[in-house]
Image (cartoon, rainbow, N blue to C red; front, side, top):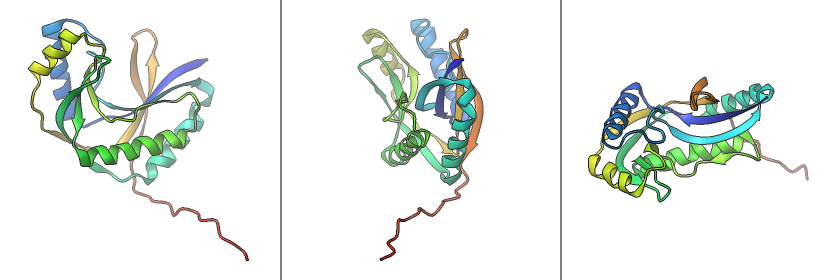
Length: 186
């Protein structure tokens, strides 16, 4: 049976709790909205595969994460997309490091139907109306949060709750493998 999966970076418990409070506060002002109940995360990618194949992709995630080294992520400003997303964004240094994690993880999966994220961010709300985007940007003006990026999670979509739940966690171990270089015999 085909299932939908997501690969994401979860921040620390403190950041998850702080984002939940922000989402609840926004919900108290504009009522229910997309992603008001989702756990704070930075999406790396989403894909759909037959569930019988998931172990193969878990191995790929383990291998790529084994080489990653932990690093601090600083969230220092808010932003929005025209599609109605309001989010927290990392500073420039964190963004560069996160983009590398996103790209290497996406490349490691080698899936043709991969829905990739190329701009690391942590959503507060998605598919907000123009009016609700304006309310969100007035409610939340400054931010200074950080967390240690030390793992990624593989999540599976619960089709009934329409929420992802964590299936597995892959830790960054800093075991950098030397890259093989094609040599010449002559």
